[in-house]
Length: 257
Ligand SMILES: N[C@@H](CCC[C@H](N)C(=O)O)C(=O)O
Image (cartoon, rainbow, N blue to C red; front, side, top):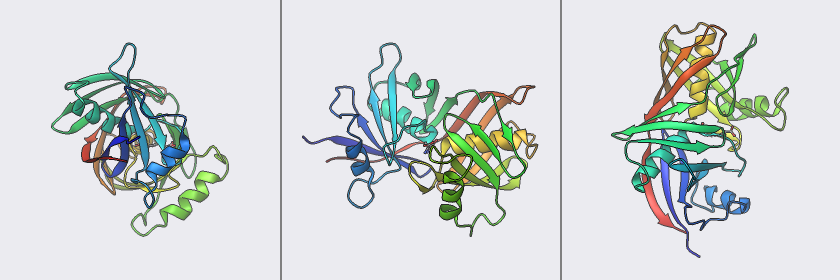
């Protein structure tokens, strides 16, 4: 049977999107997920997203990495909001469910503002910070960020102790000014650098604030695929709430396979 799909991107993090409200896609078929995400033999994407009906909320987002593993995806969620608007499921604001819980979002002129889950723990080490923003993130400074071999060093950290097989996403950061950071991310589940990672830049913004590299609670993040913003409220106990990820989400093309 032919499957209609849409290709979306959020600052270059790209996704195959499927309207699965009629259950036309078998979500247990992980082989199909990896085939569709394959850049040579399939459509090609960093991940695949299903939009499904939800009993109480506007929709449910089901996210798979390109290797069919599951986690929360910030850029994918922003694209899911744009896709739900295109499908006529929502207007300019929404409440939906994802693997990490319920999210609110607004969309205006192609810019999606997504409410992220609270971060209640920021682990600070000598060389890096670790935190979970819906997905696990290792954050470390890298001065030679433009020439650095993100894929091989990222993979070593992702597969090494203490993360091991379960892994972590790995973000390399260079400070531009008090409110602006350049970020490159190695993504678990894609097992390569992606052009942007929404949960990653959220983690970077909070890590930079927690380690006093920024005093601002609105941070600009320059990634390979464009620009994102993260705002948040810092609590007294190193916890963060009212976290918003802001940036563009665009339809690239529609097809059937
Ligand atoms: N690209 C995503 C993160 C997707 C999940 C991640 N690869 C993981 O497995 O933890 C984003 O925009 O947040």
